[in-house]
Image 1 (cartoon, rainbow, N blue to C red):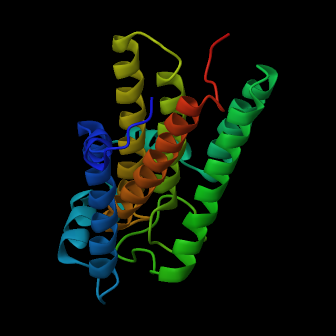
Image 2 (cartoon, one colour):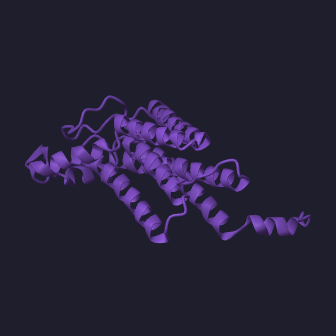
Image 3 (cartoon, helix red, strand yellow):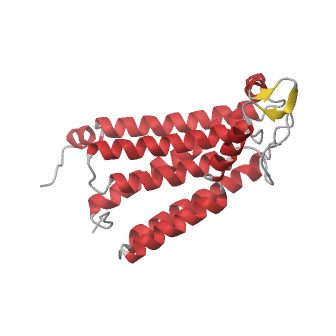
Length: 236
């Protein structure tokens, strides 16, 4: 049945979920632009410096707070957001989807995450913000600082995979657990970058906002294609 009344069409489009989604998009874009303007206006922000120094031994800035095993744990956590690990996770996930004969979804994962990696590299090249020089780096780095690639790409990859799992018709409690687990991993990865002294906090916050925006946009496309019947997410 066709609805010819423009008012009814507009009301149908302006559902609560669509308004909430649009608000989230706007908030993430505004947050990234605001942080980018602040972070690249000159000297490091006082809050950036304060947070990094708070994670260091005041008598020896080369020594992060906490025992040695905790520092090693932070290196383990930060590796979960590294290019190698995220690429491996992406390839294994897409291979599994190919084996399940869901080629469309497999290519969706590859293209979404691959384009995100390209966007992260372009942003880093465009802003070219220097790495923190207040403390010794606890991890090897070879690119510019803004935005945090670990934070952006971990948010994109883990939330995209989370969205795919959620669309498989799992129980509500399991969906909440998966989303909470992905959020915890993403937060810990970002904090580990600050702890190891390789990123300013604003780098991490900008990375989270960019990664969440890309993941949310991709998830919206996933839902759209599902409704059209051109893409099927299934456990069978």
